Amino acid sequence: MHNFDFHNPVRVLFGQGQIATLSTLVPEGARVLMLYGGGSIRANGVYDEVKTALAGHTVLEFGGIEPNPTYETLMRAIELVRAERVDFLLAVGGGSVIDGTKFIAAGALLDGDPWSIFEQRAANIHAALPFGAVLTLPATGSEMNSAAVVTRKATLEKRAFASRHVFPRFAVLDPTKTYSLPARQVGNGVVDAFVHVMEQYLTTPVDAKVQDRFAEGLLLTLVEDGPKALSEPENYDVRANLMWTATLALNGLIGVGVPQDWATHMIGHELTALYGLDHAQTLAVVLPAMLRVRREAKRAKLLQYAARVWNLTDGDEDARIDAAIERTEAFFESVGVPTRLSGYGLGKENVEPVLAALEAHRLTKLGEDRGVTLEVSRKVLELAV
Ligand code: NZQ
Ligand code: ZN
Image (cartoon, rainbow, N blue to C red):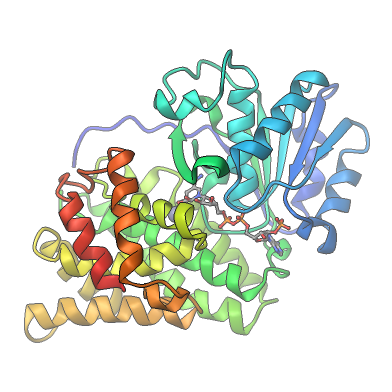
């Protein structure tokens, strides 16, 4: 296990009814801007609960943050923050709203164009407005991490940044607020959380026993409860376990002291930027092909994964690896997320533009060993057609 410095300052309030605690979580006297998406929070009652909890606060609103939040929309929010002297942000929604809020929190305090955050790998972020999150979609882990992904519509670019200045102050997680999720978003969330674990686990062994077994516990929980969230949408325990799993999958804990991959995510971001696939859809397509192409580099961990997650312990090693990858694919399909580009109307002709985008963004040495060159990415994408 490698050296590490683990720091996560996010306070989590978990369980039914926790939205009411916003009345004390949000600082008294703050000028609050509540940020949300396209209206799901009005339909499922979250909007009313938040407004009731904040009845004693000054609250302005900014709605319309889209899935894969755009720079163009977020810049309008930054203007509002500045014009209204907002000093506290409250994100109410899924990963897109929370990520967008992180960009606004940092961008509002920056001189010059906030897009520079991506060009400077967030080195120009020295402060950010404080903010909290009310999560309505378990998937990204954004509620308990310091990363965000923003899309620039004008140039079809999807870029990520991370900064210790954009950890939420708190995250409110009420599993009952996920009952209203459409099946597509439930499946997306399960796949996204699963792949977050895989990016930090399925690399090379460094004898990090706790991180490995913790990761395997998260994967097994997703396999057990993911399909149940679709068949029993109002099962509180299932929703609660999924919500906490997705948070722990990307709050930093399982990633400490171990090699990390993230090649699947980087290729996936280009697929979303170019072709509009949902984030998790891109991961369901890329991950199985990535594991097949990189099976030698990942051999030891693939065998461990096969044994501990899929109970594949007998017979030929290569057959076990094949079976584990097939089980992974079948699992993604079982929660309604297709695992081939063709499942989204894309084909071989759509591969080249992804490679060009990876090159333009200098994503030409990805993976835990920087072994995912453009040639490897090409093989992965061609295999994923
Ligand atoms: O916009 P509204 O009307 O709220 O509807 C949303 C949206 O259409 C809907 N929804 C959310 N909660 C709901 C609900 N519908 C009914 N009931 C509820 N309780 O779901 C749709 C998708 O929402 P979105 O926030 O886009 O989904 P998700 O949470 O999957 O976030 C995806 C974004 O997060 C980024 C992705 O790239 C993508 O842009 N990621 C962020 C990460 C991070 N910050 O660490 C890591 C991830 O790997 C990921 O890249
Ligand atoms: Zn993800």
